[in-house]
Length: 141
Image (cartoon, rainbow, N blue to C red; front, side, top):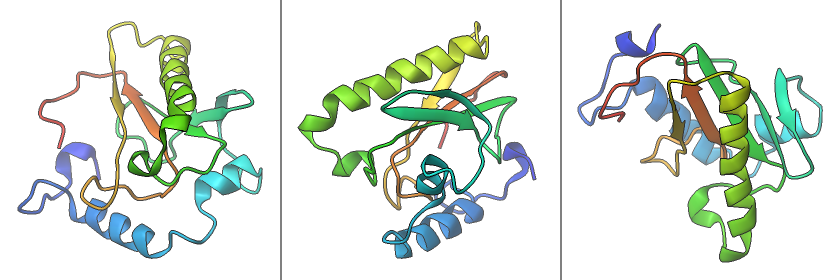
């Protein structure tokens, strides 16, 4: 099912997003897929990594280019980060810019960061989506 054809609920989100967010919220204390990628338990199509983060292709892309940037430090979501995490958060944005350049997204791209249930966060490990390769629509939600 494409992004454009997903059925939306009355609040504008897809029922798939709501179900994934709710299921993930219940399993927050278990190792998640992103931690398993960091630990090399699960393979990923990694396009960038350094001592602070990794970037890899999303397995369920919503656009021709869909990259996920994750910190190695396990921060569940942006609202649970601290002021001490500011350098890491800035680094994630810098890496997002770098991977957009690597993917030759010269006409632009979108950065998405979901937070919590109402933000449709489905994996409770902070992650940044870099999405591009087509015209984005507005509003995004």
